[in-house]
Length: 175
Image (cartoon, rainbow, N blue to C red; front, side, top):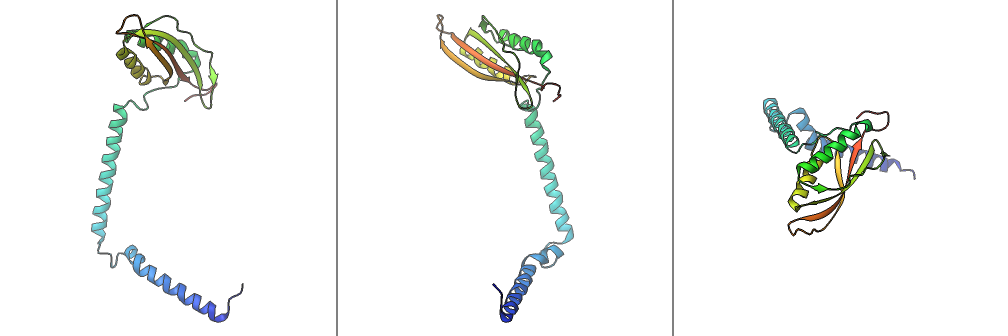
């Protein structure tokens, strides 16, 4: 569709008026006129925002440390006996009475490998919760995959089937 000469002139005038209006409304603030802010006021505002950002960064660092975020490491699968021992010692420390403790061969994932560990434990529920909390907040990246509970012969205890997965470096890689 081709515009007539009069339509082109009208469109040009409309666009010019729009640009002038936008410049008056928003552009003058960029030049420091009509905005009511002097360069020293702008500098003070920027410095205040930098202080807020610095405080937020410090607070985030404290929270990260408190929550143990980033404290884990991905060991090579050759360290799997150490991870196995870590899980076993944590279970013993949390007073979980357990029988078997088999593990799966390393499985490849995207950017990591996993080894699964399964065991049956008999303990008080609070000890199971303590174990789950400690195992998931330790130096290794380990997560609880599954657990099932049923009453034990001793009424204060439960029998649990636990499955955890430990994450390791990819083959030939470092994380």
